[in-house]
Length: 478
Image 1 (cartoon, rainbow, N blue to C red):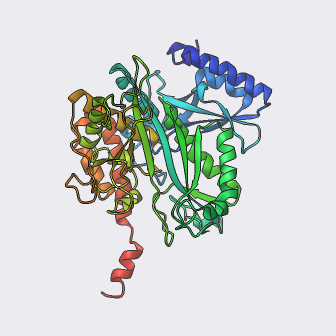
Image 2: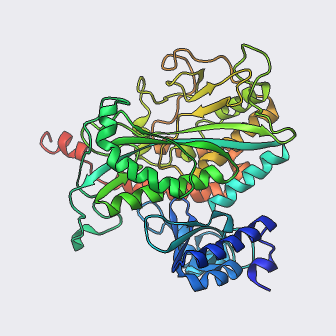
């Protein structure tokens, strides 16, 4: 028996999808297939297989080194992989041993920007057939299963801001490499500061049209393409989807945008606040609702006129507020992302909600008779791992439903309302997650400690650096 058969890792729908993928490979005369998985940072890693190896990959997976799960954002290994248990307490991780990528046939696509290339997203398993406990797609799937057991399906739509700059240099001298390497010098494509101006959009249109065409060709549910407020800043929005779909869409979208732009002499970044003069921060606003599994109705839509949310919606909202500080590591996982949380800035600085108010953390939209009734979380940054971001929302919201949590009154003056502040730094967010018994229970203490180890490693590296601010402040004075 194959590995997939032995551990029953493929549904009937996936078997049909695998057959369609094989036909497409043959009909389109594809030569290679990229097989990748979303790592702990929500970035795609994997291998490129010749098309003739696809059948073997479907049957027995593709081996990859487990040490990929031991790396921080600089690709530095922060766990002692040469010790017993590899620093994880897992035998498979000792000595950077192999784990297996098992492709999900339902994700198969043909990449439009590179010739004769297919693409598959994979789940990662241990050699004994168990899901790898640190693989975030498994974690999100588990959260969705808990929600389904309670009678609901999760639905999410994406609103993603990012920057596109013109590359001035590839910076490929040997001394430019490293962990991390030197960032490239760039110039802006527009001056910005004319929000939704047709003039600014037209300046960006040649780039945005290239991206639009390729994103649609990938099959992603694109809704709109916009010129954002800041210089060289854009926003793409996507239609709501259920299950794993929106998280899969996000990792593919980010990777596609960066690849397409690089091939055109451009640099796209989903970093929240690049160190570019006059730049504006980018956010990732997550629109979310629940579907009642009994009748398919939007469980957030109220029945009575004048109400913003149903009782289920209010309790879900209460859960998101209750766990807002501890979930910040998931919504805003980088040191840079906390530069966005400023008062009076169209970004939240405290855990409050409001009706159609862009200063709050959670914005309620819709009402009685509106099947699109939803909650918009405005705290996320576009660099977030979408599987962890969405899992944190599902688990926190479900806790609110199960405990009947009341979100309290809406905040009409969000920057004046007394409420629990959001963390001001990644260190503060890490401390909040460390203290959270809720996420330790729902995600498992081992995973929480794993993620905290990676984040604390990043913080320690940052604190060891001498910044431009320190040099200006103290070098001459003292």
